[in-house]
Image (cartoon, rainbow, N blue to C red; front, top):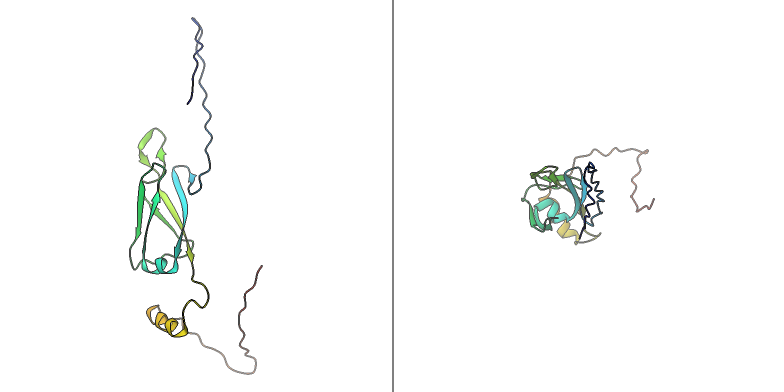
Length: 148
């Protein structure tokens, strides 16, 4: 609750009222001008096959956010909900945008047996064709985990 005191004296010009606002950090949203940003994690299945999730907006509304089947969401991609950001100064009916940055959670290693992986590979776009060189100066190597 804010209290204001008025110390007015006759024949004296009143001064300015200065209000200083401090913006608190939010656990989910960040703000840039009138745009709101957040990050959402998707499973690989959601990223490839579409998704639906709900998000509690700052004004208390629940936004149901959809991405239809067939729209692939890449790691780090950003999508926008137009007009769901912060209200504009002196025009509360016009709002900025709400931008969602997506992170993709991949399944753990060996999440499926080899025969299921072969079935999955048939559903996905084909691998790029590569030409493997031959000769005595060609050596085949395997990648290993590495921690920087």
